[in-house]
Image (cartoon, rainbow, N blue to C red):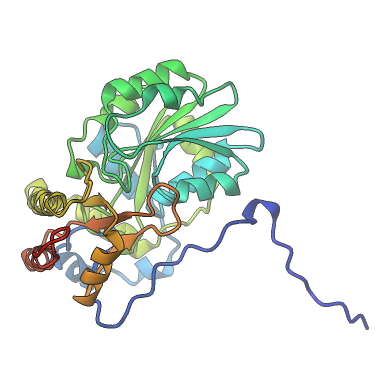
Length: 359
């Protein structure tokens, strides 16, 4: 009998990576503004499941009905839509389905933190240009593109800055790199002025990612989707699980699509109003706050850790970026739509002293 024991030898592509874990918080924290979750959805969605057939649980999931409804909504063919477990799973499928060792992708930093992870898992080199404020750095971005570039990542509004990439920028990128797929992650589009879905879909090599997690407030369902050329969608289908989204999530997402747009807009307007009030207060406190078109604001300044501790003491969690080379002095604060949460956050900010002074 051998005495040799199993020794873990992780694959080279995950060396240097660690599991994603949401921050553990003290029990008294009851207002989480650290995860960019959207406004509270209508409870009627859950009540609608009471009449669902048990067959919904017995059968493997079928996303075709939701994909057809999304195709109608966006004016594309059903084979141009893929429903995924959140928009982040679509990014994973893209990197694995279109990336390969020796190739590269281009993006900005800071941006959605899962993009570098998925690129690494696909052994795809990710090249980034810094973008903390101001207009999109088009020239610097294009300076990173070469013949080996497979993917151009455009996250707009960008997470965690809330900055926006314009239509002219997107078209310029597509013209300069016709051999690469332009991937527009529009997870927060509803909170700004969404003009890019149609623009990107009109490109020869454009892909749009959308989600139910943000404006519709359904992050717990894990439902996102990709819109693009049928051959790209087919490659993404091939690169992932055939049953990636649960039947209950698919059913609730389909019901959410039937909600009147006016109801969705009311919640979005609540987020926008909070975003502007919070941004103004943070600037008055001396923080640098880029103009955000998302459901959050980013605040940078030497007192960021002090502010995070001040809010935490009042049961409010916000996102810090300790260790990030560009964001060590930054906080990201989700803008809640609900009036009670808005009043509570603003009161906490009002009680934070001005730099060198009193509140």
